[in-house]
Length: 513
Image (cartoon, rainbow, N blue to C red; front, side, top):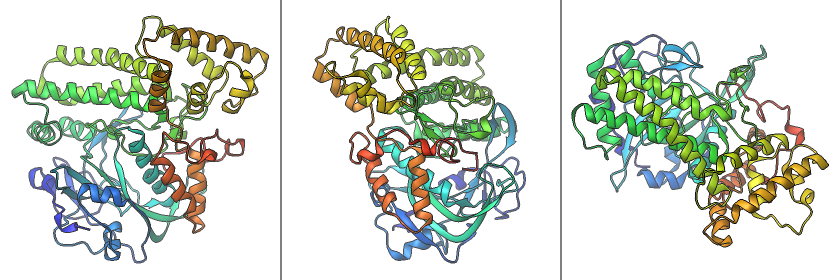
């Protein structure tokens, strides 16, 4: 790999702690601290994303590159660091946070001039680890490696995964915070993104009243990642905030399209580039439930439930607006943009739903249609993805129960079938208002509705196999997630088996997951 081409422009521009001291502490008035990966004696590669490596300019993997995948014996040009940021966690100001398990190698530029940041996760403690060890376990590493790639191939903006490796050491974790810690296999992933800048980076500088550095950070972000912004002065910062709002709303709509629940939408887990970032206690939606949260830490309030993600993203943007106010100094503008956010989000959301149903345009009467559909989904406990797959194949000459019983998590009695039949008739009437052909309508559905999603129970099975030294399921899941709009493995395109209903890691997870 072309490791010698990695550079660190960020640490040349912004103030940092250059001591290399891993002691966990506050680092006021700086945006990063230099820190070296801890190093591992017996690493072993599990998976490597060669297509991504070629795309970003790193090139092909060679055996000697294994050390780089876990942060061992780095060359002189790779000067590693972790960044400081702050954030609101579960609605409360948490103060300084930072990269507690992430260490940046820097940035590489490919032949087309595209820049990509490269970051280890699980390579040791940093000043921001907050009394933790900075390690990662196989369980959480497999989940992030596979899910970030699954989201990419679904067409959802996301960070990506370059490699997954065993560290050769055991890591102690209490998966459900139940007082039962256990040894687990340690692992490291390398993840990539155009940038890992979060709302929290801007919140930190604003809270510390480091306004000059805040201005430099926004200028840096615009120059590198928002090149469409050409305005100057205060207008430049207004355009930046409006653009972040638009990207965030678009991301939320994509989450709803594929049924993704993040589980921990703290402001420090929100990308200013509108990427899905930090895959922890996430879940793809099995049975449709607006109140579903996959995160045990989010109970009982369910702040980050599936149906609240649009609302929470707007709340998070309010916090970003507060952070940027010292540069913008226009309360009326910020309020208008944030109020417009809701209108833009809901219009985009409903247009997305139209595509899922094969409808060519949004009509005024569709609000009631969508509300009735949500009630149907929750009452009949339909699987979110499989329902739309079945709707694409609907045949009014076939028995209704035969067609839909395999996509419901309950028995469809006569009352439920009557409710379903009523909805199907309304749907067929709505389809008649289309100005496109039936073939074009189905084509719209095929492009919008995935046939494969990476469900938690599949991840659970895969992790169990890798723990046992097998990689067959990892290979099959990778093949499936690279082709999510095709049914390559029919057994993967089925609802969650009841055997997995109450297994930790298959429905509910903790933040340590």
